[in-house]
Length: 176
Image (cartoon, rainbow, N blue to C red; front, side, top):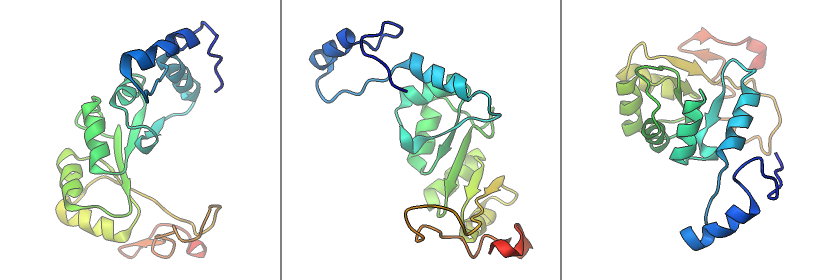
């Protein structure tokens, strides 16, 4: 969303920006909470708004998003810890943090199990690991239908295994 630095509808003006290097040094990252709130409001037409933390892991931005009702997707233990530091609470809001990955290390497995963070699983191995530590754990399945667009065919790790989980069909056979 283009924004003129000479506009006065937010605090992000050329005059204010020019002061920041003297105060904070360079480089300095600047975010405009008013613009972020406006963008979130535009997304509120959807039932759930979920932010991929890998796009921006700034705790202040995550806190602002939480205050606006945005949920987060975490792909590492560090991102789960940042979401917790920003005030996300899996005990009071069980699906505000979702862990998404194809593989999971022991420390992350223990964390998602202890906090009962839903797991968006991308592999059968991951489901097996989770099932051994936390039977009945809430999971979402990442199903790769085996078609689509992308820069390469290589990052399709579950194309052949996504059609069944423990022998249970989860998508039509013609998708595999």
